[in-house]
Structure formats: C-alpha cells, structure tokens
Length: 212
Image 1 (cartoon, helix red, strand yellow):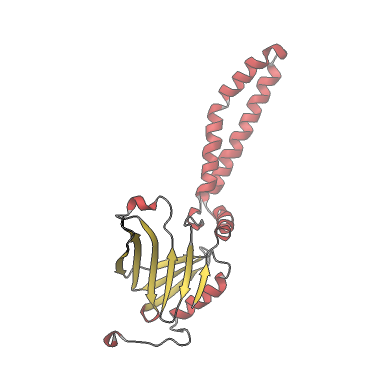
Image 2 (cartoon, helix red, strand yellow; image 1 turned 90 degrees about the horizontal axis):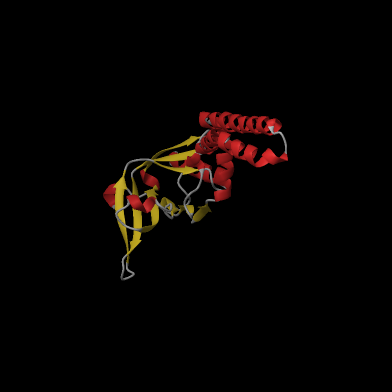
C-alpha cells in the first residue's frame, strides 16, 4: 500500500501562481490600484486647499466622504484579484490518495459548509476505483489536474446518534480529479498515468467480472 497526503501550502502556492492567468486578476489589479491612486490624489488636493490647522478636522471629514466610492471600487478590485483560480485552493481539512493491491482511492474529509447540500452529515468520503475498471487517465498540465475515467464507487460515511457508523454507496461512471497539491505529485502522476495504460502494481491479480 502507498499513501500520498495533500498539503494545503502547496495548493496555495499553485493558486497564487495560476490566478494571474485569469482576466479577473488583471481587471482587479487595474480597479484596485486605480482607485487607490484616485483616493491619494483626492486627499492631497483637499489637504493642500486647507487654510490652516483649524480646518484639519473639516478637511479630513471631506476626504472620508470623497473616498467612499473609490474605496468601494478598491475593495471590489481586491475581490476580483482573489477570485481567479479558487478551484486550486484546498478547502478540505484532509485529502489523501491511496494505492492498494486492487484499487486506487481518493479519500477526503468534506469541505466545511458543503454538508448543507447533503442529506446526511458525512464525515469522510472515498472515491474508489478498481485498477481493472480504469479506462483512461488524463493529465492537464496547465490546470495541474489528473482526471481518472472509469466506473468507480463513492462511499460517504456517516454516524448515527447511537454512534453506529454506516456508508452510503453509489457507483458512477463520471470521472474524478486529483489536483497538484501533493509533495510527491510527479510520482503520484506517474503512477496514475501508468494505471491508465494498464500498468498495474506488482502483485495485482486481475479478476474478470465473470469470476467475481
């Protein structure tokens, strides 16, 4: 068995690098710095018109009123800067990839707040796919994303009030992805790409559907 554990710090570095490729980043930069420059110019113009220290309070109040609209624009610009590439951030408290003798598993603790869309309070989710069910594996370098295609099982674990643990199980054909938030991502990528070429781990024993 081989386990890879995701690191939120790596995910944040990737996000900071990739958000510059989004138009929202540059739009936000122009909005924020343009608004800040306007605030500076307005405040300087008002201060230079003051006739003395006795008008300082009046001038400061005037500056505060004049800065409201450009201040809102600066805040919106900052929001635009941070908006692009949010999918690269790791919002899950824990995420890991596990290779065992028969299958690959993506395991994670659900993102806080995501439970509002779920029928139960799940504390752990696993995407498990047998090696023999992997149809293909794609890698998108620009997105830092590995996508696995094939029939796999989603197990969503929950606990009842009497402390009994169960799992809702669903088998689907939709692909699932792993992002480059792992310290050994290149090694993880090579392993998964090998699975897409039916390069199964040593010791794996293929069992056809008719033999199950």
